[in-house]
Image 1 (cartoon, rainbow, N blue to C red):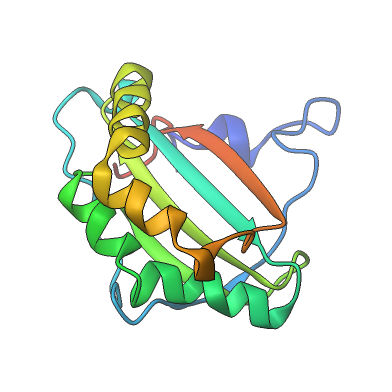
Image 2 (spheres, one colour; image 1 turned 180 degrees about the vertical axis):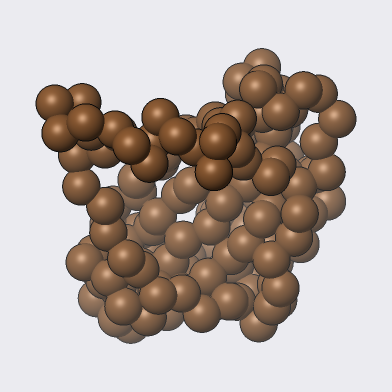
Length: 153
């Protein structure tokens, strides 16, 4: 509680957020449990990346979920050591249909290097070039976050 005092007791003139939203998620079948990040640098350097991929329709959204599960995108992230915390379908939220996932990195340099490796990976190039997986995301939101003093990781 002491570490979170600035957040908890923020005055109305300087709130720590504009608004917040509640979202209910269901884990992907290929990643049914949340994973703790395996990071070694000091917590203050860690970067967490939350991605939300919206689909044009429910059917097209299901195609992107399929790409992660049956298509092999989740194992690809694992092979490339993206330190995923979770992968999930949004069951209730304001931007449906969509899925969300969170990856974690030692720092921004590590994050950028991972995404470059991902983009250059032959398995990703093959998967993303398949006709059945074309145009299955209508909007992608990317939120980069840092750990706070009172964060566990």
